[in-house]
Length: 173
Image (cartoon, rainbow, N blue to C red; front, side):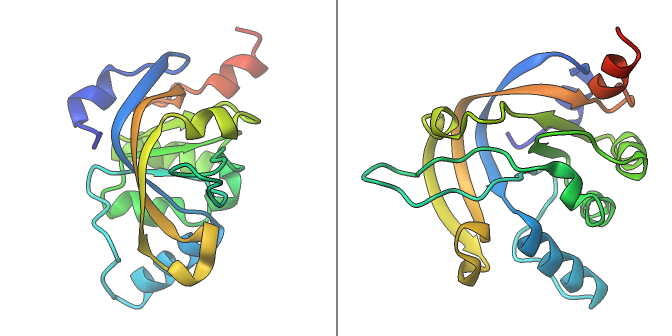
């Protein structure tokens, strides 16, 4: 991480991969603020070029680097996703299906959507080596955090060519 175009094009829907490097958390309220900043022509609090957003809100730590940090439902961010992809976002991590508009935007921008194991937030937090706030700290767990991850397990749900594991599942493949 950050994602490289050749790496993204190599990925295929259904493959399990392990991510290492820097990713950023952002949930509903952080997405809303970034979308408003884009509409108002303001700069974003971080460059999204080649970056990956993890739809998660880390819980407070109990003596470690981070508390539980599992994925949230991605479709809640669908209204904001095309605008962020236009700003250079190349990866998203969450859980669940995406809308047709987002699937098309992922394909046209050459991005990728990963799913992380739901219900495994405590386990996933062991793959996070550091966490620091980046923006919107007033949002608490919904702020944007910079995470350094190592061997963070995900599955490619929608690849840059439009392959979608949810469509394959509904077709029985």
